[in-house]
Length: 215
Image 1 (cartoon, rainbow, N blue to C red):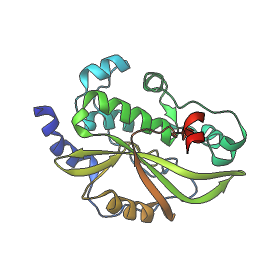
Image 2: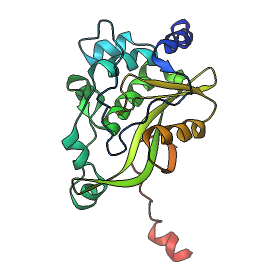
Image 3: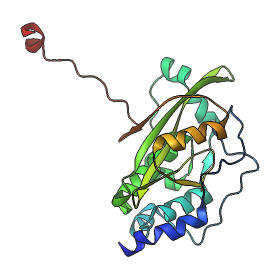
Protein backbone atom coordinates (compact mmCIF):
# COMPACT_ATOMS: atom_id res chain seq x y z
CA UNK A 1 0.00 0.00 0.00
CA UNK A 2 2.86 2.39 0.83
CA UNK A 3 4.36 1.80 -2.59
CA UNK A 4 1.04 2.43 -4.29
CA UNK A 5 0.43 5.65 -2.40
CA UNK A 6 3.86 6.81 -3.48
CA UNK A 7 2.68 6.58 -7.06
CA UNK A 8 1.32 10.11 -7.03
CA UNK A 9 4.81 11.52 -6.64
CA UNK A 10 6.18 9.18 -9.30
CA UNK A 11 3.49 10.17 -11.77
CA UNK A 12 4.52 13.79 -11.46
CA UNK A 13 7.73 12.81 -13.24
CA UNK A 14 6.08 10.95 -16.13
CA UNK A 15 2.73 12.65 -16.71
CA UNK A 16 1.86 16.03 -18.06
CA UNK A 17 -0.87 18.27 -16.73
CA UNK A 18 -4.11 18.70 -18.60
CA UNK A 19 -2.55 21.24 -21.00
CA UNK A 20 -2.77 19.68 -24.49
CA UNK A 21 0.47 18.33 -25.99
CA UNK A 22 1.58 19.26 -29.53
CA UNK A 23 -0.75 17.98 -32.25
CA UNK A 24 -0.07 14.56 -33.76
CA UNK A 25 -0.19 12.98 -37.20
CA UNK A 26 -3.88 12.04 -37.54
CA UNK A 27 -3.25 9.17 -39.97
CA UNK A 28 -1.28 6.88 -37.65
CA UNK A 29 -1.38 5.33 -34.17
CA UNK A 30 2.41 5.00 -34.20
CA UNK A 31 4.58 7.22 -31.96
CA UNK A 32 5.54 10.58 -33.35
CA UNK A 33 9.11 10.85 -34.62
CA UNK A 34 9.72 13.78 -32.28
CA UNK A 35 8.21 12.03 -29.24
CA UNK A 36 10.83 11.73 -26.50
CA UNK A 37 10.54 8.60 -24.40
CA UNK A 38 11.27 8.78 -20.67
CA UNK A 39 14.40 7.00 -19.52
CA UNK A 40 14.00 3.86 -17.45
CA UNK A 41 16.20 2.33 -14.79
CA UNK A 42 17.19 -1.35 -14.89
CA UNK A 43 14.36 -3.41 -16.37
CA UNK A 44 13.30 -6.96 -15.42
CA UNK A 45 14.71 -9.77 -17.54
CA UNK A 46 11.45 -11.77 -17.69
CA UNK A 47 7.73 -11.29 -17.24
CA UNK A 48 7.80 -13.47 -14.13
CA UNK A 49 10.47 -11.21 -12.64
CA UNK A 50 8.45 -8.14 -13.58
CA UNK A 51 5.28 -9.45 -11.94
CA UNK A 52 7.25 -10.19 -8.81
CA UNK A 53 8.89 -6.78 -8.66
CA UNK A 54 6.39 -4.23 -9.99
CA UNK A 55 3.83 -2.72 -7.64
CA UNK A 56 2.72 0.52 -9.33
CA UNK A 57 1.49 1.76 -12.72
CA UNK A 58 4.59 3.95 -12.99
CA UNK A 59 6.81 0.84 -13.10
CA UNK A 60 4.70 -0.71 -15.85
CA UNK A 61 4.74 2.58 -17.70
CA UNK A 62 8.55 2.87 -17.49
CA UNK A 63 8.93 -0.52 -19.16
CA UNK A 64 6.46 0.46 -21.89
CA UNK A 65 8.34 3.66 -22.58
CA UNK A 66 11.64 1.83 -22.86
CA UNK A 67 10.59 -1.27 -24.81
CA UNK A 68 7.44 -0.83 -26.91
CA UNK A 69 7.81 -0.76 -30.69
CA UNK A 70 4.95 -0.10 -33.09
CA UNK A 71 4.24 -2.78 -35.71
CA UNK A 72 2.96 -1.02 -38.84
CA UNK A 73 2.25 -4.22 -40.77
CA UNK A 74 0.18 -5.63 -37.90
CA UNK A 75 -1.83 -2.40 -37.76
CA UNK A 76 -3.05 -3.05 -41.30
CA UNK A 77 -3.79 -6.70 -40.46
CA UNK A 78 -6.04 -5.52 -37.61
CA UNK A 79 -7.73 -2.77 -39.62
CA UNK A 80 -11.51 -2.65 -39.91
CA UNK A 81 -11.47 -3.83 -43.52
CA UNK A 82 -9.03 -6.69 -42.91
CA UNK A 83 -10.89 -7.99 -39.84
CA UNK A 84 -14.13 -8.03 -41.77
CA UNK A 85 -12.74 -10.22 -44.56
CA UNK A 86 -9.96 -12.30 -43.01
CA UNK A 87 -9.51 -14.78 -40.15
CA UNK A 88 -9.43 -13.55 -36.59
CA UNK A 89 -5.99 -12.42 -35.39
CA UNK A 90 -5.08 -13.11 -31.77
CA UNK A 91 -4.04 -10.26 -29.52
CA UNK A 92 -0.60 -10.81 -28.00
CA UNK A 93 -0.57 -12.39 -24.54
CA UNK A 94 1.36 -10.42 -21.89
CA UNK A 95 4.13 -13.01 -21.46
CA UNK A 96 4.80 -13.16 -25.20
CA UNK A 97 4.52 -9.40 -25.54
CA UNK A 98 7.15 -8.95 -22.84
CA UNK A 99 9.56 -11.16 -24.80
CA UNK A 100 8.89 -9.31 -28.06
CA UNK A 101 7.29 -5.94 -27.24
CA UNK A 102 6.19 -5.06 -30.77
CA UNK A 103 2.54 -4.61 -31.67
CA UNK A 104 -0.29 -2.14 -31.97
CA UNK A 105 -2.52 -0.24 -29.58
CA UNK A 106 -4.67 -3.18 -28.49
CA UNK A 107 -1.62 -5.40 -27.84
CA UNK A 108 -0.13 -2.70 -25.64
CA UNK A 109 -3.43 -2.09 -23.86
CA UNK A 110 -3.88 -5.77 -23.09
CA UNK A 111 -0.37 -5.98 -21.64
CA UNK A 112 -0.97 -2.95 -19.43
CA UNK A 113 -4.42 -3.98 -18.19
CA UNK A 114 -3.52 -7.61 -17.45
CA UNK A 115 -0.29 -6.59 -15.74
CA UNK A 116 -1.85 -3.84 -13.64
CA UNK A 117 -4.66 -6.12 -12.53
CA UNK A 118 -1.98 -8.45 -11.19
CA UNK A 119 0.52 -6.05 -9.63
CA UNK A 120 -1.73 -3.11 -8.66
CA UNK A 121 -5.38 -4.23 -8.46
CA UNK A 122 -6.31 -1.09 -6.51
CA UNK A 123 -5.68 0.92 -9.68
CA UNK A 124 -8.87 -0.54 -11.24
CA UNK A 125 -7.33 -0.78 -14.70
CA UNK A 126 -9.78 -0.73 -17.60
CA UNK A 127 -9.73 -0.45 -21.38
CA UNK A 128 -10.83 2.69 -23.16
CA UNK A 129 -11.96 1.98 -26.71
CA UNK A 130 -11.99 5.11 -28.84
CA UNK A 131 -13.77 5.26 -32.18
CA UNK A 132 -12.48 7.98 -34.50
CA UNK A 133 -13.81 9.16 -37.81
CA UNK A 134 -12.27 6.53 -40.11
CA UNK A 135 -9.10 7.13 -42.11
CA UNK A 136 -7.85 5.01 -45.00
CA UNK A 137 -4.18 3.99 -45.04
CA UNK A 138 -2.87 1.85 -47.93
CA UNK A 139 -6.43 0.82 -48.70
CA UNK A 140 -7.20 -0.21 -45.11
CA UNK A 141 -9.79 1.51 -42.93
CA UNK A 142 -8.53 2.48 -39.47
CA UNK A 143 -11.06 3.56 -36.90
CA UNK A 144 -10.57 2.15 -33.40
CA UNK A 145 -7.87 2.95 -30.88
CA UNK A 146 -7.25 1.40 -27.46
CA UNK A 147 -5.65 2.90 -24.36
CA UNK A 148 -5.80 2.16 -20.62
CA UNK A 149 -7.39 4.02 -17.72
CA UNK A 150 -6.44 3.62 -14.06
CA UNK A 151 -7.28 5.37 -10.79
CA UNK A 152 -5.25 6.93 -8.00
CA UNK A 153 -6.90 8.71 -5.06
CA UNK A 154 -10.15 9.15 -6.98
CA UNK A 155 -8.44 10.74 -9.99
CA UNK A 156 -8.18 9.19 -13.45
CA UNK A 157 -5.01 8.64 -15.46
CA UNK A 158 -4.54 7.31 -19.00
CA UNK A 159 -1.53 5.48 -20.44
CA UNK A 160 -0.35 2.54 -22.57
CA UNK A 161 -1.01 4.65 -25.65
CA UNK A 162 0.86 3.43 -28.74
CA UNK A 163 0.95 7.05 -29.92
CA UNK A 164 3.08 8.12 -26.95
CA UNK A 165 4.52 5.10 -25.08
CA UNK A 166 5.80 5.94 -21.62
CA UNK A 167 3.45 8.91 -21.27
CA UNK A 168 0.84 9.17 -18.51
CA UNK A 169 -1.96 11.70 -19.01
CA UNK A 170 -3.70 13.05 -15.96
CA UNK A 171 -5.06 13.61 -13.46
CA UNK A 172 -8.58 13.99 -14.82
CA UNK A 173 -11.95 14.15 -13.11
CA UNK A 174 -13.69 12.19 -15.85
CA UNK A 175 -12.97 10.12 -18.93
CA UNK A 176 -14.89 12.66 -21.01
CA UNK A 177 -12.47 15.39 -19.94
CA UNK A 178 -9.57 13.31 -21.22
CA UNK A 179 -11.37 12.35 -24.45
CA UNK A 180 -12.10 15.98 -25.34
CA UNK A 181 -8.43 16.85 -24.98
CA UNK A 182 -7.25 13.71 -26.72
CA UNK A 183 -9.30 14.54 -29.81
CA UNK A 184 -7.47 17.87 -30.03
CA UNK A 185 -4.10 16.17 -29.71
CA UNK A 186 -4.89 13.52 -32.34
CA UNK A 187 -6.52 16.03 -34.72
CA UNK A 188 -9.33 13.54 -35.30
CA UNK A 189 -12.99 13.68 -34.36
CA UNK A 190 -13.90 11.07 -31.77
CA UNK A 191 -17.27 9.57 -32.66
CA UNK A 192 -17.66 7.58 -29.45
CA UNK A 193 -15.75 5.96 -26.61
CA UNK A 194 -16.38 3.22 -24.09
CA UNK A 195 -14.71 2.09 -20.87
CA UNK A 196 -14.56 -1.71 -21.03
CA UNK A 197 -13.43 -4.61 -18.87
CA UNK A 198 -12.16 -6.57 -21.89
CA UNK A 199 -10.86 -5.90 -25.39
CA UNK A 200 -12.87 -8.86 -26.67
CA UNK A 201 -16.25 -8.22 -28.24
CA UNK A 202 -19.04 -9.91 -26.34
CA UNK A 203 -21.37 -11.81 -28.62
CA UNK A 204 -25.08 -11.71 -27.88
CA UNK A 205 -26.30 -15.10 -26.81
CA UNK A 206 -29.48 -16.40 -28.39
CA UNK A 207 -32.23 -17.46 -26.07
CA UNK A 208 -32.81 -21.22 -25.81
CA UNK A 209 -35.31 -22.57 -28.35
CA UNK A 210 -37.88 -23.38 -25.66
CA UNK A 211 -37.74 -19.81 -24.30
CA UNK A 212 -38.13 -18.30 -27.77
CA UNK A 213 -41.15 -20.52 -28.43
CA UNK A 214 -42.72 -19.57 -25.10
CA UNK A 215 -42.30 -15.90 -25.89
